[in-house]
Image (cartoon, rainbow, N blue to C red; front, side, top):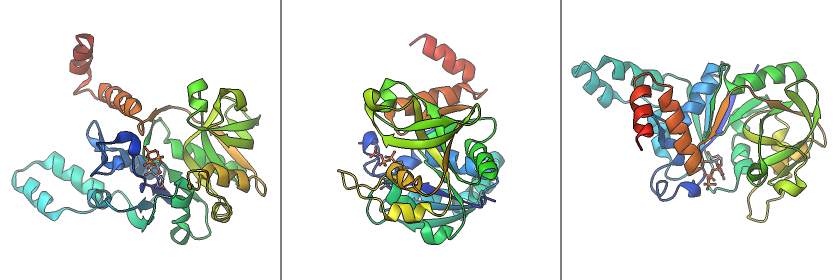
Length: 284
Ligand code: UTP
């Protein structure tokens, strides 16, 4: 039912400077694959076959990463590096990719709006590439399952602390089941005093196509950016929106510390690194 996903990747990645001065944040590597590949693999694991990536100037490495690379493949073939060869071919066959330009980084809501023609009039998934989800059932699949049951937009929720209320959108929840909440209201970065709850909106969404109209009607914030949280607030005036407390683990890899944590924890899960890395950390 959800055939397409949108991955916004046109931001400046300022929190990662200077690393992101001349390379996309989405191409920073966690263990041995770029951030954006985690999102793509998650979407593909959820049965999505078509992915629209929102890009801007300086982001062509993303297109190259998911494209065929005949010279590299020939080289690996000649050197009989079969495992690497299979892996680079697998990456270029993961999905159908469509690259859509956001000419100016005017916010996440604006980036999603750029995909309107690509999506058309159907529900779709959105995955932010700087959030890595490590879940038994792909996080976006968990949301799609809720969408199928409630036939309405669904946003992923995570429990947060006081610090998180300054970083994320926080919802006013009406609990429906153990993990499903109806979103009654939401506020972007309210801070601990004004937060309705400890339920934060993080980087996965399933939207009905009406979100595009809501984004068009959303006023830019004081930084001139169109925020998706504000558009969801408008959507709430006409439609129900649900939140889902996902099962699994999430790393905020858009932030330097979260990126380091993701790198260490995901490397510890790899048998070829686990023991040596654990011993190394003990001796640090
Ligand atoms: P972020 O806010 O995490 O990314 O947006 P950013 O703006 O690149 O990073 P900072 O805050 O300056 O450090 C989440 C995702 O949305 C994309 C980003 O590329 C990132 O993958 N995005 C953000 C866009 O595509 N366009 C925008 O205008 C803003």
